[in-house]
Length: 348
Image (cartoon, rainbow, N blue to C red; front, side, top):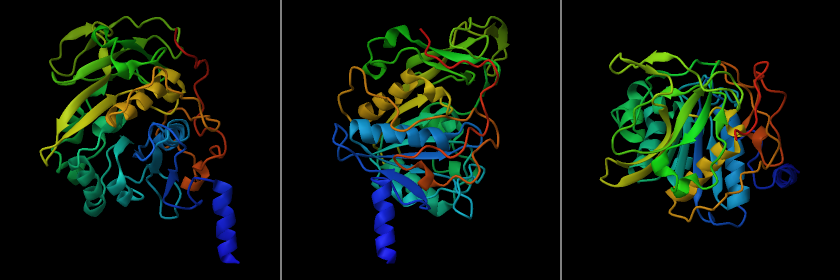
């Protein structure tokens, strides 16, 4: 009888995991990514990666043929709790990863769990780092890399450049990157998060810069005021020059091999309502795996997506990995609604 119940639940969830598991995994449909496994690592207290990364994982599995698995920070009762900085729910999944997408903040994973991540990096897997991935780790967890953000991704945490929760970000294509295949179909990028102060190294290829806008609407005018840089304490116009918000580089790992790196300092759950930003991540996955990047990758949602606005401790309480299975929408309503007047539409 118990076996029959288990089979019934598995059938209901289709290609996703059982409710109550420590992670959620989406088996692939046919597509260019068939045979490749991308592991997404969520775990930040503010930007709701536990909402956005399953949405992106569903897209690449159902629209592009990649197997996709999402790991979480979990509470002792198995519910998702991004405040648990020492939790990495199923680190052994990283041993099977062909690529990693990470959006974590100041994680302090135990040595045994961390080693799975270190080994994956040292295998040379491509890495996409989003928003707070520049400060993905802290404390002892930083030691294998020196500083994961700075050494691997090309920048660590510096500062909020735009006004947090007040100014949004309009993505502007770097002129020298206009023909880069990573930007195929990447238009109208806009997000409700502010621009981060960031200075990628000389070996980085800048793809997008972030125009700070005076408000939280895609058609808001560019902000105009002076801002002091953290590096040399000199003043400059907030958008003169604009800070990089997406770049690529190559990292030489401890084994002597290399990792393809794509970084975007945009990436809260509401930012990914931007079709262009979703497409940048999907393009990055193709690029990392050495596959031809589609002219305009399909990034339509697989299941309805109603994300929470970013806020500390603003996660949906009681949500479990199984609640994010295929065919399911996140339970309840957004824990933190968008501010009054925030209008999400594609920038022109």
